[in-house]
Image 1 (tube, rainbow, N blue to C red):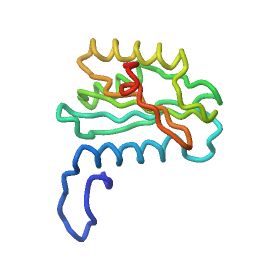
Image 2 (image 1 turned 120 degrees about the vertical axis):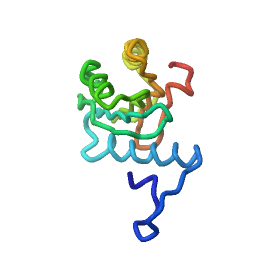
Image 3 (image 1 turned 90 degrees about the vertical axis):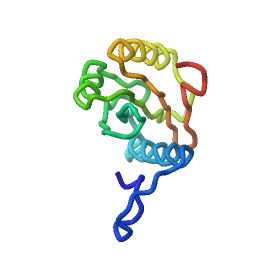
Length: 142
C-alpha cells in the first residue's frame, strides 16, 4: 500500500510509528468517503490482520444525504474471506454534522457485537465531514 512505503527507487519498506499510521489511514479514508460528488453518505471498511496490519479494504455502501445502508452480512463476509482479525469502518456525513446519529450508534454497537461473535474486533468507526473526523472509539461509543 503506497502510504506505508517509501518511493520505489528506495526499494525498501519503512515502518511507520502509530501516529503516522493513524494519520495515513485517516487521510486515505477521508479521500474515499469524501470523494466528489459529496451528496450522499459513503461507507468504506479497512480490514486488519492479528497484528493490526492492513490486509484489504472495500467500499461498504452509498446512501442518501442523511443515511447509509450497511449490509453487515456482506461486510463481515469480506472480513471472513480475508481472515481479518479487525476492521475499521468509516462513513461520511455530507450534512457537515460530525457527531454520530442515534442510528449510527445503534448500528455500530450491533456490528461490534456480531463481529465479536466471529472473533473480529471493530477497532473504530470514523465519521468524516469536510472539516472534521469523529472517532466513535475515542468518543466512548464503542
